[in-house]
Image 1 (cartoon, rainbow, N blue to C red):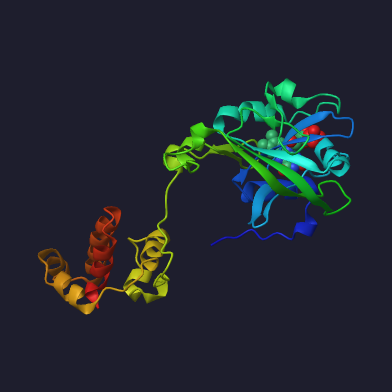
Image 2 (image 1 turned 90 degrees about the horizontal axis):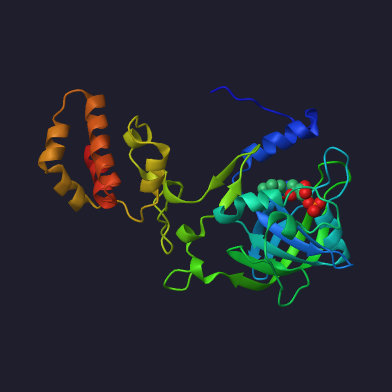
Length: 297
Ligand SMILES: Cc1cc2nc3c(=O)[nH]c(=O)nc-3n(C[C@H](O)[C@H](O)[C@H](O)COP(=O)(O)O)c2cc1C
């Protein structure tokens, strides 16, 4: 397989930035509200953002030094002056207004007004929250870690969650945040975004108490399959038990397996077995699908 290998030291920052942002994606978006010492409110989005700890509850985002002139952003200056921030979560309903709030207005301009967002007073910090956001986190800033002094250098704003506000319309009947209802958006490379909704959402069942058997426990013909993909193998490897010999013998005696085992050409036999197993995998009959795969041994 052809591979392009790059030493980051050989690239100009804008080129490197482009690769990093296209490859490390989708990234969640923190719509950060801050204030300066005069009380001027600022609102800007940051996709160098994630949650890193639940105990203590810590989120980190990074207003970087500008690549073009090595200046710092208002958000960075504000959290240094007044170490508080409200991190508002962005969903599809507010994505265009969020984008508008990234415009580089002067420090006396309140992006809440420019973007048409509602300022709602916070309970324990000075910066207001975005009334339209599905979830908002009032945070104090533990520290800011500057990663460099040149254009493009990140500044990690280590933020400790003090209050969480959730719009009730995004909760399910159990009172939990509902991923389907949230309709969150994320930033990709260049000007692309993605939306966590509909077919873009899927679940991967994971055994919590027992370890999966692992792909290495599957028969060699399965590992070399031209019918089953790496994702299919991963799903089988995630199962908690290998099929026992009684269930394999029972399966072998079935008409369907008998007709496959009677095929003359080995590769045809293997492909037919894998296709038969895949049919069951797709119908969520995982144990049966795994047992089928062991009928050749
Ligand atoms: C979706 C989105 C994500 C962004 N992520 C970042 C980021 O992670 N770091 C950054 O420095 N700028 C990021 N920007 C650009 C800033 O939002 C922009 O520079 C903003 O004007 C900074 O505002 P401030 O000077 O008021 O802090 C992003 C812009 C958008 C639209």
